[in-house]
Image (cartoon, rainbow, N blue to C red):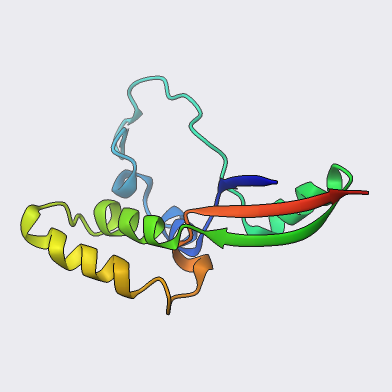
Length: 117
């Protein structure tokens, strides 16, 4: 069993935009002014499936999870919804959207279960 951060559709779209837009440590004119350290890997469902196979496991289940958390992060980080006035709206969105939006869009993590071959 494993869970890893999901490289979801939100990340894929964001990663195609200017780095200065979403990385507060990056300046378009100067790049990074300080040394950066690696934070985390994110895997797609297909990449996690491949890792299972590469290490001798038969994947039994691969599934994005924690969509509400991913949606909440999108609202905070991508749309800037942080104030107390907008929190009620954000909480409502986080409750209503995950059941109807495909998990690959906002899933925060991907769960994998496999069996050793």
